[in-house]
Length: 124
Image (cartoon, rainbow, N blue to C red; front, side):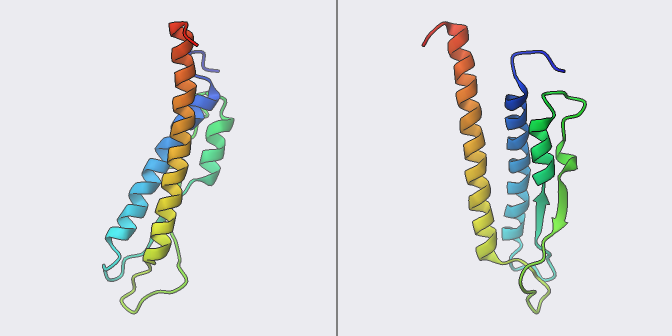
């Protein structure tokens, strides 16, 4: 078990932010390729890796990494005649949801670090 200033929850939040950042890059790539013939929409399937980020208990040896999050081709409801599977409305919704999740995790982590800062400073 890791001993230090940061507990398992803080470590899990940090990993969650990394996962969401990577997913944002992949979703943005889908949007950028909305007109590319043959482009297959992709996503980062990291639900299990994200859950284990919090279950690892701060142990660096058992903590999941971004490589444990699977990059998948995400089949959509339809494939356009040019072979592209990107649905721009769905991608924008996924981006908004991912951004919201990232913001939530970062605010929680910021509050936890703020509490640590107040404890160090001795302020209330």
